[in-house]
Length: 136
Image (tube, rainbow, N blue to C red; front, side, top):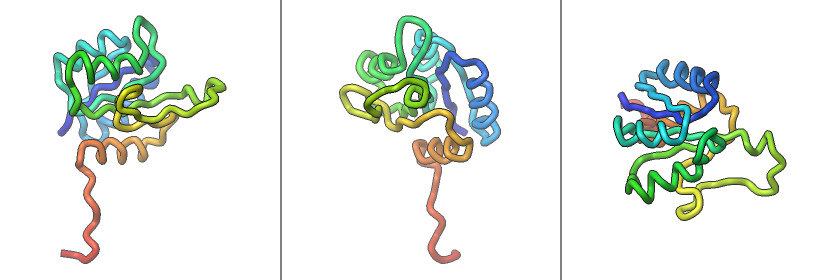
């Protein structure tokens, strides 16, 4: 099964993500700082990264995503960005994936329902298949 790296500085959230994704059979690695996250990406080469926007330390999630795409040429690494920024701050605009400014594949708000998280991860990894219209 695929390896997923979750980069988030909230240890409770990491624990929850670990439970949900491991329960679906994924190998889950975690990092609590941007620098540790980038180092783990380069070391373990995960199949997908789940990345928070607001991180403690030198880099924010936006910079981590750009570094992975630009500095390390990981253009094919699927990145799912999750954030609570829309619900915790009065932001007059919505974030969305953008090739130059926010180079992630999917951007979603926290909290996220476990079923939606799993479905999104499956789709990003190409594991979700449509049910046949007629039984085989």
